[in-house]
Structure formats: C-alpha cells, structure tokens
Image (cartoon, rainbow, N blue to C red; front, side, top):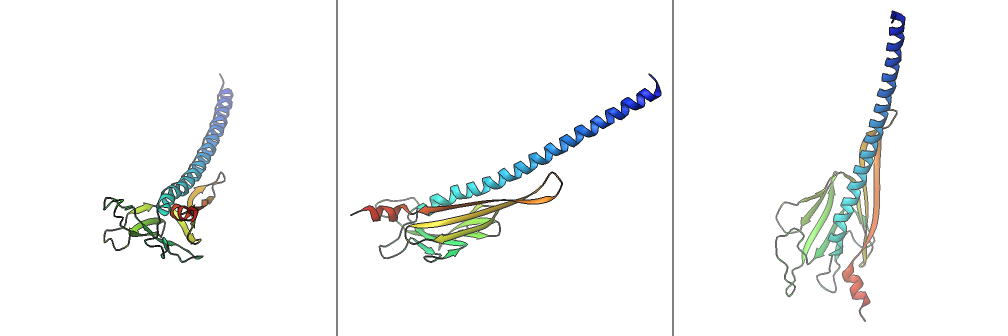
Length: 184
C-alpha cells in the first residue's frame, strides 16, 4: 500500500466517522426533544388525575351553602376552596354516621400545586410541581373547570432552545349536586 492509498482510505474513514457522528447527534436531539414533550404532557395528566377526585369530593356542609366557595360563581382564579366530608390529608378517620365537614384549599404558587386544610394547622403537602398555570373556574353548584399548562425547555435539531408546553382542560361535575338534582 502506498502513502496515497493510505491517505485516501483515512480520509474516507474520517468522512464516514463524521457522518455517523452527525446521525448520532441528530438522534440524540430528537430523543431529548421527545422525552421533554412526554415529560411535560405527563405532568399535566398527573395533575388532572390528582385534582379531579379532590374536586369530585366537594359537598356543601348545609343545603343553603355551596360546596365550592372560592372562586365565586362564574369567576376564575388560581385558588380553589371547597368543603368535603373526606379528610384528604388523612388526619381523621371518616365516620359515615357523624360526618365532619372539612374545608380545603388547592392553590398554585410558582410551579407547584399545594393542598391545604383550612384551619388545620399542619403544613400543606405539595401535590405537584412543574405547572406554569393552573386556573379554576367555578361554573355554579354543579361543576368546576380546570385549566392546566406545563412547560419544559429543549433544543431543536438546529440547536435552538425551544419551550415545549402542554395544556389540558376539563370540567369536573360535582356528583353530590347531580345526585340531589336527580331526586324527585
């Protein structure tokens, strides 16, 4: 083998190496982009899975009171206050013969969502993180609309930083109110 042949073969090997490296980097960026998108979508789905049962447990403490007290009817806010006969923090055992009505607050502070028992004294547990926006709309005695948005940062194939977001909205019907409305 001559020196020219060795140089030609090394240059071809170098070009193939650069091509393989470019393919690897592109696959890595696509994988990271897809992973970030899935992570952000899972954050909104998990938040919805945790919020819906909490809100469905809302029950008015008396027939002349509302189960959801904040935001007011027809209003939207980042805080939801409701009454429930279920102790979501596990501080007391339920007694169906003698229900105790507890007031709870779900609030969005920064990227985190907190559940507090009003008048409970204990520090509130964190429900979730990574949420950029949480809005509750009180649609009256029968339902609450939840709108969530989560975001994450990723790089595109061109190397540009991009914000990936996922938005999820649902309307939660309060079973207690629907049960009361169905009775003659």
